[in-house]
Length: 337
Image 1: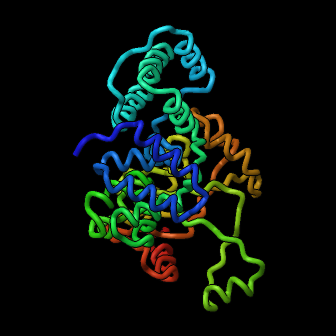
Image 2 (image 1 turned 45 degrees about the horizontal axis):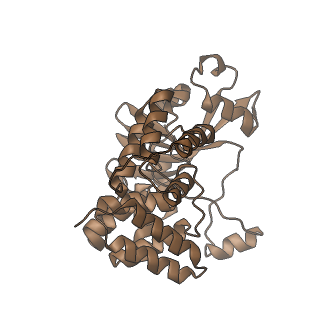
Image 3 (image 1 turned 90 degrees about the horizontal axis):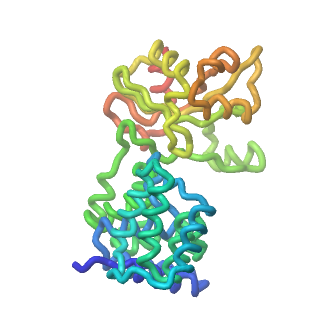
């Protein structure tokens, strides 16, 4: 199978942008994905939704608009351009990886110059949209998920479930196109790989909530805390935010507390971290200062933290997400010392 050129991806973006029909967008994207290698499909899907690296990855390009504009201005001022073969989708991604891995601003600029010098003006425009997360072609994640399902011949629910566990649409596309429906069905929760959190939905009153749940509803106090997902195996603990960022190093007191009372060999716990001062929760913005600090020693006493757990997704090698919440809650209470 021939490698897909970046220019072909840009052509797809233009076609998707030119139609207002949701179904037509899905058909266009699905038809494009069907022709790709699985690894190309992963890159294409991330680019379509304005992402470069997997959502759970800590990698970042660290290229701002000022640097991009300076490089672009320098290229426009030159009389000659490099005469290179059109870059493929994977070659563009590989160059972006090199830019992300470089700590030198000068090196980043040189690498970006080299990349942009191989692209047409139209291709530079769409690359810029990708880099700054503003693709804006009307291909939201819901549309892309439907396109993946159509291209792989599987159901939308299977794609959504795999996305919950893999936490990245690019990874979902790779599995779907390489291994099909069977591969998607085998996707499951893995320790130390954060999963997409279950988010709350609004309801107008308690009667609506009870009616929606068939009369069996669990209630939790809502504090102004930070949502966390905690993965534990033996003495190893990792804490992730709802955006899948690893904040373990910012929460040494929470790690220590958890190790002291958790009665489980391995677990994935869902809850929130609350800052408590003089018996009262601290405002969310003050708590975030604690979470974002690299050196937290000065704030350990100033903003002590309390862990509030409300769900258990995995316990001692067993995935629990398909168990009723009442059962998960019962198991959770059993592992809390």
